[in-house]
Amino acid sequence: MTDIKLPAKLIFSKEIRSYTGFSLRWIYTLEQRGEFPKRIRLGPKRFGWDASEIAEWQNKRRDIDRSQ
Image (cartoon, rainbow, N blue to C red; front, side, top):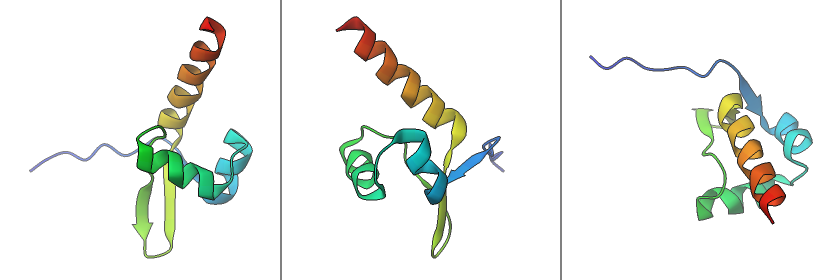
């Protein structure tokens, strides 16, 4: 049996826009390109993102911006 690691906190669609400043449509595009963390499906119409993955993504973007 494989242990399942649950995220410490999930960020839902209403919150993700305020965290990123991006629309859901753009976030989905970035996900498809592999440039944004994948969402976690919780049900047919419910999903969220792992808050630690979003924080890591934001830190990487900030580091890239600072290096330019």
